[in-house]
Image (cartoon, rainbow, N blue to C red; front, side, top):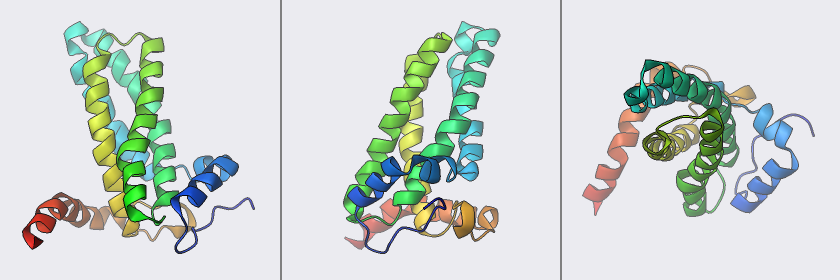
Length: 181
C-alpha cells in the first residue's frame, strides 16, 4: 500500500506507531506536513537567533539558519506523526506520546544537529525548543483532531481563516476544563 490512508476508527496507538515504522516513506515523507513546518521554522529560527545573540550576530545567524534547516524537515515529519496518530486510542496514551514523546524525539536529534554545527549557547535554545515543541505538538494534535493543519488528501483547506479561533479554543481549553469542575 503506497498511498497514505486515514487511520481506522478506534485504531490503537500501538497499531498506528507500528504502521509508521513499517511504512515510514508513506507516513513520514509522503505525509510531511508543510503547514506545521512553515509555522515552526518561523518561530524556532527566531528563538535560536535570540538565544545566541550574546555570542555575536554571526553566531546567532548561523544558529538561526541551522535551526531553520532542521525545523523545516523535523517539524514537518513530526507533524506527520501527529497527523497519523491523531485519532489513536486510548486518547490519554496518544496525548502522552504527542506532548512528551514527539518533543523528546525532536530534542534528541536537534541537540546532535546543533552540537555538530557548533552552536555556542545550545542549552537555553534547547530548553526553549522542548517547551515550544511540547506546546506545538499538543496544538498540532488539537487542531488536527478538529480537521485543521492536515495535509494530503484529507486536507479540507481554509485552515488559515479558522486558525485564530482554534488557537483561542486551545488556549482556553485548560481554564474551561477547570471551571467545569
